Amino acid sequence: MKKSLMTVLVLFISAAMYFSVSDTQAVQLKGKKAPDFSLKDLNGKVVKLSDFKNKIIIIDFWATWCGPCRKGIPDLVSLQKTYGKDVVIIGITVDDDLAEVPPFAQKYGINYPVLYADRKVIKDYGGIDAIPTSFIVDKKGNIVDKHVGLIPKSEYEKKIKELM
Image 1 (cartoon, helix red, strand yellow):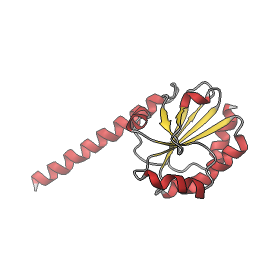
Image 2 (cartoon, one colour; image 1 turned 180 degrees about the horizontal axis):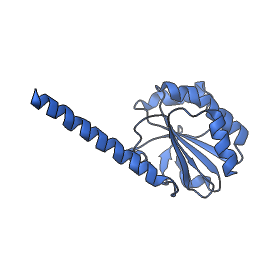
Image 3 (spheres, helix red, strand yellow; image 1 turned 30 degrees about the vertical axis):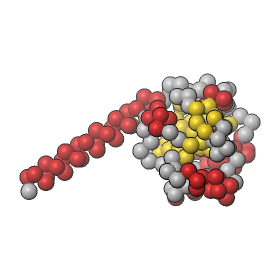
Image 4 (cartoon, one colour; image 1 turned 60 degrees about the vertical axis):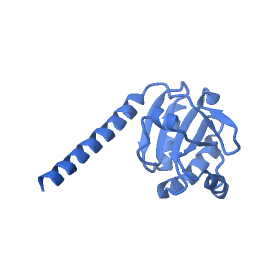
């Protein structure tokens, strides 16, 4: 009995430490330069964050199997259409089955770059423990906000207008 209680306690403490480290990393990113990355898009072209200088950038970590991600994609498509001159949305998929991503992007009419995540980008952004996870980057390249979970379109619009 004591052994199993001790095992549960050790697992709980380990999990708490893991998640607190990830949250701490994410908090430390706020106000700092967004880590640059070089990731392949759906056509195999390498895209860098630094390709989008002087733009407001929304970086959205997502997956095809994620319900909240599916629900939020139409809002991101709409935001890209409305603010495309000043705002760039970058979808970074964490899917394991990469073959599912192109037909999914076509079905949902995704009109912004969709990139395949690698371990480095996930680590550089503080560890992505849940999806969707979004980062908002200002025109100077600094992370101004991080949000885990579905974000209402109105909240994105409010932040975009503040940064314009």
